[in-house]
Image 1: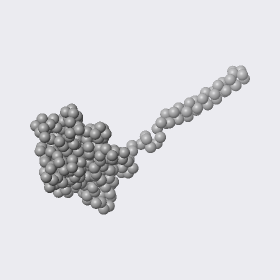
Image 2: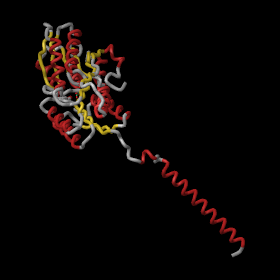
Image 3: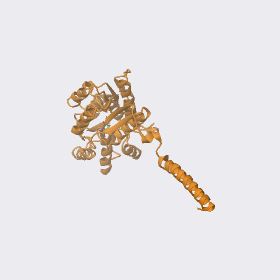
Image 4: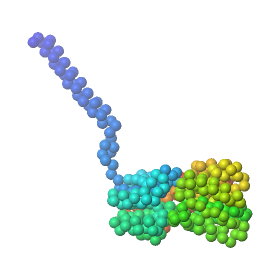
Length: 330
Ligand code: BGC
């Protein structure tokens, strides 16, 4: 081999080696660029909680979940949002049972009835899984704590607001989410107690919507047909007031009929702005979710928690709307 070819081979091999090293180095950088160490490893959480909602697709429950999720993020908790897509007692109970079988660290759910929820809650607690009731309490169960509205008081406030706004004269029809669920029973009872000594207030109908929009509308329609004397409605769960407003507008009776509803969902706010819904009972679902996660952590860590935490509840009318954010993210 000539001297010249030896030099040429040596330079060529060196060049080959250098370019190989560069491609390995940069190739590695490209592959690893989007995989920072933390992401490639399985994330470790401090706890695993489940929030079982009455109705997953309900905007009210989405706010509870939003609050719970914010706290879960802060405290590194893995949070699952589970339950029936549309209110269904059997699915609700089954979801609690399955969460307990999965040995989660804590369950947050409603205590909808003493006969069905309390025995199950007691069984879960006996297994060593803490339970917090949210939104609706099963006060006679062994749940560790409750966070949510004082449901009797919120109904009482609605009654007082109706007396004030109708100057103590009204034929009232009530559409309630349920005849058998604790929170709905308490809201109706609070309302009845508030109006009981008012000579001019008459409760002329009491119907059940089963937490369903369609049934709430059907019941409102039926009341309009059967009770031409009706001039006020009270809807005791988030979708009832909205559907009452819908039906009352259909009859073009929004100027003659007073409506008080529950919650501050976007549609409720829309009907208040239109003047169809005159007042609503504000709840704080976001705070319920956020607070429930914090309370659950404290319970697990052996810290003292108040067994009953009542979130704020108040009446809102058109003039109060600038304070919206009501019930949602602060
Ligand atoms: C109640 C919830 C219920 C929802 C139904 C709210 O007023 O607090 O428990 O699931 O209405 O739309």
